Length: 316
Image (tube, rainbow, N blue to C red; front, side, top):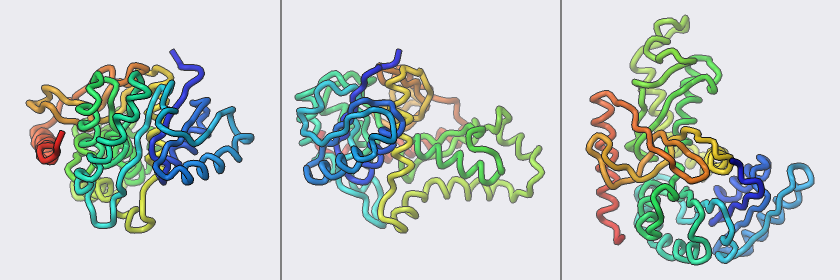
């Protein structure tokens, strides 16, 4: 089932929110896009700029609005919050952005208590958990962007290393969207061939395990490098958000590593982080926890513990 006349509300018209609106407009997925921001002038300017390109694409109505315009939205995407500064980790933002969410989430659900909420603001996993607590929504209707972008970075860097189209690389980053995330090398494959076996078939020179470490370090440090170079990341995450929203609006039952509430996975409970999950028009249909190696399990528990320690220090 595809929602034929969909409405998407974007709370936060900064770099990420406006880039997402642009990518969404090009995709043709939504017929109505509303930008909501505490800086109403910024939201008006972004909507004007977008509308001036409407004649080049699919019919869409783009406008700046207030929280009352969340009414009728199928998906509400939240990108609002303090920005990550150079040298600052995503988790450093937790306290400030949770307080911001305590103000904006009640205003959203006052006007729309049936939409799917997609959290993008950092630290995204912590804020996804906070949103579940603030809203008391069914957990399937609250998700974070998870490690969808991280997994895309992972596939891209593997593809560059192997000289293979990234669309033929199947590999996930799971856990926190941040410093404690982990690569699931045990399930990575190239065109259905397990990555460990593909390496033995590949004719290209490779330095072995050291190269794999370099690939993952490139994934983990990507945001820091981009922030240092240009101040913020927004293009790739905008495309990742379009992919998530597409899976929702088209009722695809697609598998994407979004962030949602994790229960009883290798003894991990009551925390949100990225795991492959089935996404459809109801939100998170099912969380698919892959079988992990002993080392991967250890890494994932560390990631979960790190997030839970942050959550413990917040007033939720």
